[in-house]
Image (cartoon, rainbow, N blue to C red):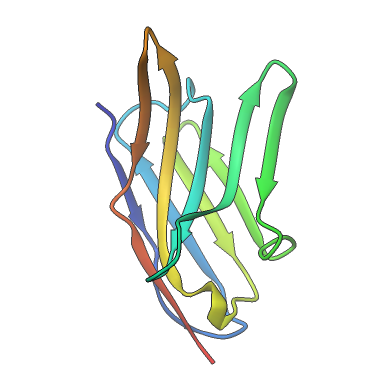
Length: 123
């Protein structure tokens, strides 16, 4: 079983930057997808950014609200997923969760989540 641990969250002023890290206990080389999600009270957890690997190649996706400001990346050697967040806005305030999807094997979905890290952006 893979364990994901997020770090790097905190309090930052609007316009500032944060870099979130997600350390995986296992190799992320075999993942179907890795990504970052966020959730605020009363709202559904939403996709922020993801990297999907498939036969068509590697696809990076971003929520419209973060395009041009956030960048997702991964370091396979360190088994770490990153989310660089620039030009932060108060509406970016949320708990951010790391996700690693290893796909489905014989009916079992190998999809893992971190415990979340709080990001608070003050105006």
